[in-house]
Image (cartoon, rainbow, N blue to C red; front, side):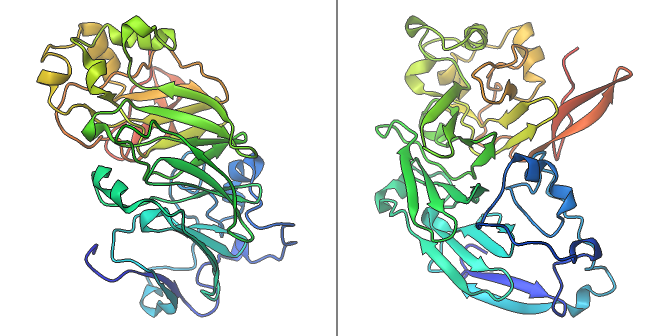
Length: 367
């Protein structure tokens, strides 16, 4: 569908297609648009008519409990409104819907806000990404969505910036650079917000960069912490013991080629354990012969690789769980198998453990 002219569509059954019986009770409107915080996200299931984060809930289940559209009445769905988008380029964003307003990002990292009931555009924002930056993107100039928190809308731009917008007006509040602009980094993933930290990763492992995830203060844009997913040059020292351990499984001068392991999409937060799970992409370069001299990993790293390159870390600090270092699988493919995953509970060895899983597999917890 990327070759088609893009429009944003809304469908409805009567006047309440997107509501459920438990969601029709009246409530006091919030004092400001996008009035979202941690307590509200944790209790997202109590507001089934909202979609307040990228995966709807912190555990990114992406399941809507709305129940008024059924197999019996789906035939009655019809167009409620549409909005033309000013591009023929790819569209991959998950819309955010909060208190009657729909927020969406489009190609070239533009952001728009609509009245969710009528389709009337409230505001539009263009970060003016340089057109030449598009050559650094592996898979078109797409953007996967925005995050909202405490009256602000956050978007990562293709050219590596993180921007906070006023949810009421779309005017920028702060704009920070998150990358080394001399390297071919991009951002196409949606930010997430946890405890006032705006979390953002990046892409570019196909072209030779070193992956990391960063957290910025939602109010000021100040960098709170950064965690690298692969080790850098050992002569420069390691940012933490986890990366020092991971470096033992790499060979040659991998740091001259970037290393890869970019956090280009998936994140999932478990508020019970206060852990953030992130998925990383391919090693850089793709060809392991050049990346790590074609050598096999050790038996210990193979055990770690069974965690499917997912790292768990305590949100709000730079401490990573030592059993989950950033080791990139011995492979030459570009896409990660964990482009989508969720936090969930699984039973293991007669004990209940919280863990992360993708749509294709369940990761075995550490024994």
